[in-house]
Length: 179
Ligand SMILES: Nc1nc2c(ncn2[C@@H]2O[C@H](COP(=O)(O)OP(=O)(O)O)[C@@H](OP(=O)(O)OP(=O)(O)O)[C@H]2O)c(=O)[nH]1
Ligand SMILES: [Mn+2]
Image 1 (cartoon, helix red, strand yellow):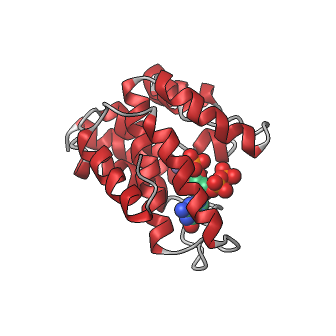
Image 2 (image 1 turned 30 degrees about the vertical axis):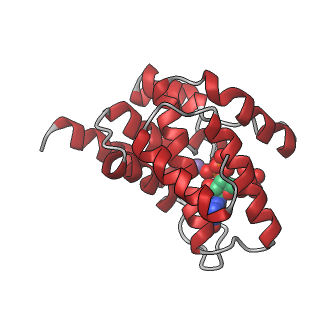
Image 3 (image 1 turned 120 degrees about the vertical axis):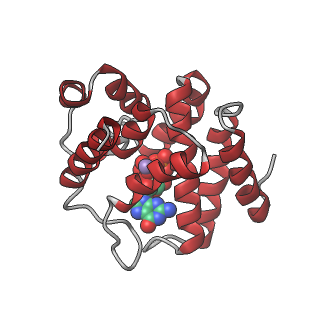
């Protein structure tokens, strides 16, 4: 087996352990790990991304934000580049939600190319997930607001991956929230 495959297995195993107790917000309580795995797969299969550090960062992208994982732990285990990409896509959960959402829009254009790729795939996955089923407790208005906010974040990520941006644009168009 080649070493990239070994590295990806180690990474997906780490992410699965960290997210082991978490579920998605859908009625079926899908295991949370389906999301980071799906984000990495969007990058590889739809974005044509082979940069192993981007794929690892995608698998790990919600570990610092949503589990007890620290940036130091990621750096020790996966190196400084993967740790930095994850750090770039991590929201400060100590801030009020509205401020966190505002900061994503503000920070998006200043992210590295690698972090922008992960952010595009994260938004693409989550928007598709909203089309698949509505999270428990969300109104149709809240779903629509998420699309509008995601469009603002994606505006700051443009020029990164035409394949992913075109797929996002089609979802925005279907919702009537295109530019
Ligand atoms: N569409 C959808 N999203 C779900 C589901 N379960 C969990 N989520 C997560 O919920 C987040 C979006 O919900 P919000 O209410 O806007 O944000 P919050 O959880 O961070 O407060 C996303 O976090 P994130 O990945 O960190 O991305 P971001 O939106 O914060 O950038 C998404 O991954 C689900 O069943 N459907
Ligand atoms: Mn995510």
